[in-house]
Every structure is written in structure tokens, then in C-alpha cells.
Length: 512
Figure (cartoon, helix red, strand yellow):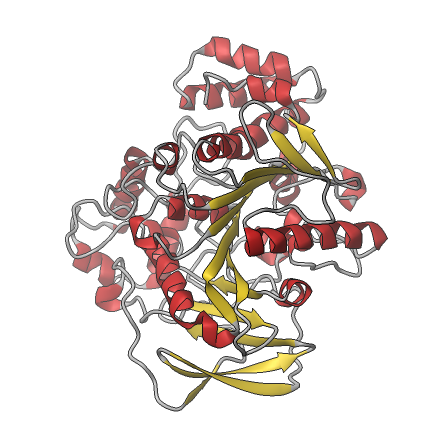
């Protein structure tokens, strides 16, 4: 199942790109092109290397079906998005385009980067038709290399690159810059947006020299540059554990390129933590890393210096992000006081602080949350998502007046409302994917959800068009500042509030 998609075709359309002609199809007022390759297959000597241009094809290439997805391990989250799909290391560097018309209208472009912790996911999970049709905009989604194939740290290799997944994104943006006008889009009005790992990727792109000039606005949903993340030391540990598991000497790039993709994914799965929780002092993670080449410095450091001063930014998170992992792992539903104490200690330890900070955190969060599970979820949500979003907005607002903040608080009624405004819940609203019945993170279509979805779509569209999210669906939203911290709250009632959950926010001052 592809959520929100229709497979019936009404009329074919052909567009000539810089690589050759592609055939898409019309469906209910939207022209769809699926699985367009934007770079050469990243296999053989191109594994772990920067993406290279395609050899142009002759004739007309069908772009009627989604391509295989990037190689990845099975995931409960992807099952929620519609199930595992055919995978291919060779055929994964593709993008999808939804456009209201192939003409010279120069529509704003919304370029989506999917989430999945940089180890899972696909650009085919969400259909862009409703967003494109509602706003008369062009929507693009991409696949990029995942896991160790996209983000293995290779600092000593002259024939390979770290952060090749990020370079894939820049390559797809280059394709858009060169070709999107032929699909009815404006190459000078590109807004990148991403959720979860996609949001982290957007933050990295804000600081990447190779992405400079390829986009003009940025929306970060439930993921930004974590102040304590992207460090080479953690990336080195992943590399060392991987090659040890594979039995490969350090620096033997040829051996890494010879191993089957199945063995690579199997080894990656073996060395990564199972829970993804906060009970391990130094958990293993894959994703962008400051390598001093592709990503010269931490995005927050670069943004504080004004590196992305020309980019309008709209950033935010969901109120109950980490309750999604409780949904995916019901065994974690109940935790004891001791588990809460250990979890809070792990967080302050990763921040390099002593036990006094753990006590301070717990004291503040216990004022509004009662059960250990709810307290831990609130702390981990703020640690992972909300506070990093605030830090990025604080930094960008020093240089760019068009910096705005949101908080999504609409509580899903799924399973009696126990998961609240969990991670990824906002995606259904942003893309207009409302189902006949509620299914996990995807809400049921009714009057309430339709009104909220339309307001959120209009907000994302307005930001893509002008660099400012204000539109008739919102109360007046001022730019973000450290003085007022104006934030639009997306809920049953949409409102603007200064410094929401400010008491909890202050708990992190000096900690992160």
C-alpha cells in the first residue's frame, strides 16, 4: 500500500529531462512521475563514493511506478507506512514528482526528505498529490542511500566519502534545479522539508557547501541538528564495530565494496542497539557526521555564524514524540521509578553533566507528569526533538527574520488517546493523508482532522511560496525570537503562544 496514492491512469505525459525523456501519467488533476533516476547506480567502485551523473538514455523511460527502495533492514515503522518494498542498492537513487501542470507557471517546489533514523524509509511512503493540488505547487520526494551504505564514516579514504547519503540529497537537488522548470516548477523557489531523520538532513544541508544555492527555504519537522550529535568519535565506533563484525581489516575499502549488500545490512543490524532507548551511555547511531569536508562543522555552529542567513526556516516538533516507540514496542509501556532514574541519568551523562542535573530535570518534569512512563517520554521528547529545534531557531533568528516555530499538540484518539501527539503523527496532516479509520500514526478523516489538515497544508504551502507561514488559516504568527518565543500550536484550536512549556524548556539551559 502506498498511502494516499491512486494507480489508475487517465493520460500519459512525457517530459524531456537533462538525462532523457520520462513518461508520467495524469490522475485527478495531478501529473505523476515516479522513480526518475537522478544519479548513476552506486554499486561496485561507486559504493561509498559521491554520486556521479547518469549516462543519458535514449527513447522514453517509463516513470509510472515507484522504484525499488534503498537497501535496509526490516522495520516495524515501515510496516506502518505500508509494508516492506522491493529493495535495490543499484536502483535506489531516484525521485518522484507530483505537478499540477507541465507548463511555464513556475510553481513553488516542496522537496521532501523522508525519515527513518537514516536506516529505513522511502520517498514512496507519502503521495504528494493532495499537497500539490491544494497549493498549485510541485512536490518532489527522494530516495537516498541509508545505513552504512549512506553514512559509514570513512575519514582516511581518498577514494570514498563519508556522508554520501547527504551528497545524494544534494545531487537530487541539483537535478531539481536543472530540470524542475520542465515539470512546471520554479528552480528559484525550492523549499526543502523533512521529518525525523529527514529533518536532521535538512539541518545538515543548511551547513553543506555542496548544497549552497540549491534551495531557498527549509522546514524541519521533528528533527534538527542535535547539539550533542554528528560527532566523529561516535561514527568511528560504528565503523570499528562494523569491520570487526565483517572480519575486514581497517582501511580495506576494496573488501567492503566486494561484500554483498545482504551481508552489509545483516552486519549493520547486528551491531546496532535494539531498543534505541536511553539506557546505554554511548548508543550507536548512523547519520550525518562532521567530517570537515562534506559537512565542515556542526550545523548549529555554522548557523550561529550566519552560514544559512539567506534561508527562511520553519521548525518544530510534536508534543509526545517518543510515545511512538512505546506504540511500536508495547513491552516498554510500563517502567518503574528505577528505570526513570537510570534513563534521566543516561541523558545528563551524555551531556557531560553530573547527577545534580538529573535531579533538576526530574523535579521539573514531575510537576506536570505523573507516571514514570509519561515523565520519561516528556524528557526524551524534549531532549531529542523539541529543545534541539528551539536551539536551531534561536541561532537562525539572529541572522534571518523569517524564522518561525511550531508545536504540534493534536492528540491522536488511537487506542484511547494514550499516545498523544506522537512522532510522525503530523505527516498525515501535512500531506492530507486522512484514512477511513485511524491506523497508528495516520488519523481518521472527519471534520476535525480535515480542518486541521487543510490549515497545515496551507501553512506549508504559504511558507514554500513566500518564506513566511502566515496565511488565513493561522492567527498572526510573529517571527521567533529568544525574547518572546512565539510558537504556533497545531491542535483542535490553532493558536499562537509565547514560550509554550517554558518551565520545561528552562530545565535544559546549561545542559544542552
